[in-house]
Image (cartoon, rainbow, N blue to C red; front, side, top):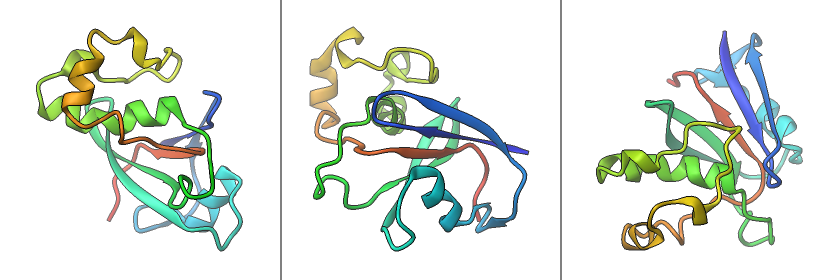
Length: 134
């Protein structure tokens, strides 16, 4: 079984083990959209992320910025993990969904700005898949 997490904009997280059918190595997109509360025709964006030190996959609202979705601080912090790891900022990696993701608790927001991360955000709910994909 593979774990997945649904992370909403307010920081609530639902975690479950996936036992259903897969498509491309993950739950079918229609199920991911259902978990996120999206309409079946809503566009879904795949984002490669680093989670718990391993490659993982996150699915988010592809047009969320255009439709005014709220910032998702936890999903945004997960989205930043790859860049932080590549630039040797491993102490800033976010791997605990129960922890406060607030940027102001980080050592130096100038580091984030220098890496171009403050503009790289996730809005709306996010589906974090811990499994491999094809």
